[in-house]
Image: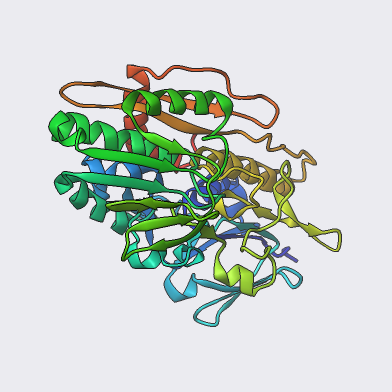
Length: 401
């Protein structure tokens, strides 16, 4: 009598989910062919968006076509990919190993990987929705592209009200690119009439080495920086950001990196903390809410995970590869567990490529126990970083590195 296939269910077909599914499909291809393993991936839509490209969109460095791709072109045909109402998760029952989707269909599993990402939540700041401009969505980045072409005079405030956020280096990168665009594309006559203020909720802008580079370039570019701020509200009529303590920051144009929360369906399922983040062991990435609610067969990856695991694209990539390998080891019964050691990173940009600048960047990386080393951006780093967004589709998302 044939044994039932081991069922691997992946929630979310973003970077982490797609990378893991492709690795699993490639390395378990024989088991899949013999119906010993079944891999299913669910998502509510069928378009993959490389969100790391959002910071480039406002400055014409990429187009939406550069950072979007149909998911069916990216996911192995050995994987059952389900999109739309049959793929949109509405409830996760970890105790019964069952996932319900919008259409009412239910999926059972032996192993579950949750990689659903997170959502913007501007409602957390009173008044923000009345003057909400962001590059953390594709639509918002396109809107900013129109604004930076025509903004000629005044004060731009770049506001990050709270952590955690996906890609915590993105606000500083956007700020540098904005200064570069105004200074070298629009022209010095425009830049000298525009003040830029960067409001940040914690002490450091990234690890110490990253923060040192950001601090230096902000000072050189005349970008005012306020750290450890706490926001009470935004007054769109007065164009003011009100800070705790009574101080008000005036602006002419406000760019916000909004608060983020976990996915509502997971919150409604009672498997997250009060802000929607999924609890996970920082080394095994297995679900750990309490001793009574720990599930070895459930893995958490990417932006859906706990606040103590940094939310970066590089981190999600490593987590997906590690989870994929551990699922393979579980299926094959090797008894080997590969630890996640906090492998992550964040691209640093000090200059874009223009008629007046050569473009400089650096892909900073670190782990839990190895602090980021001091670094300097390079011209090669800029071109490698730009190139990454193209090889991402053919190599990165396929789980080949």
